Length: 126
Ligand code: HEM
Image (cartoon, rainbow, N blue to C red):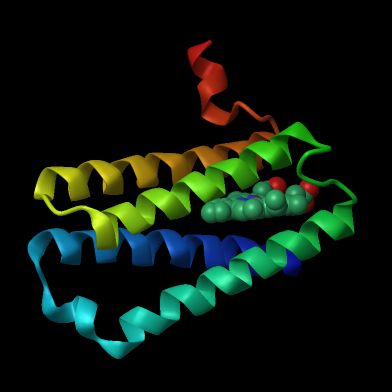
């Protein structure tokens, strides 16, 4: 159940971030909608909450288990790149690059989750 909520909120997080990136790049007024400012944060809070609950339920933790350290650090990178893409970057190229990088980092997190290996899909490149 916990894992289902975690995976579901991860999917919503990806979808909302993908759409918001497109809106920002297109200069859409959708970004001013109230729900767009609230729903992603509520969703991401649930995602993080279930992440913490899952670590406790399986007894594995970041800075003890490498794959969870990788997930946590990649999550921080995803958040920073997301803020850059949606708020800070001033040019289309800057926004686009930060947005694409954040999407790749997100897919990396999913690959780490599925393989339980800190290198995730990078393992295939080694
Ligand atoms: C954007 C952020 C995240 C995404 C996209 C994500 C994605 C996923 C996915 C897809 C699974 C299911 C893997 C499977 O089927 O076995 C999962 C499980 C899990 N995730 Fe995350 N996750 C994220 C953040 C985190 C964070 C920050 C932590 C904790 C540091 C975390 C801890 C866990 C744990 C403990 C499991 C359960 C593993 C198990 O059942 O053995 N997740 N995550």
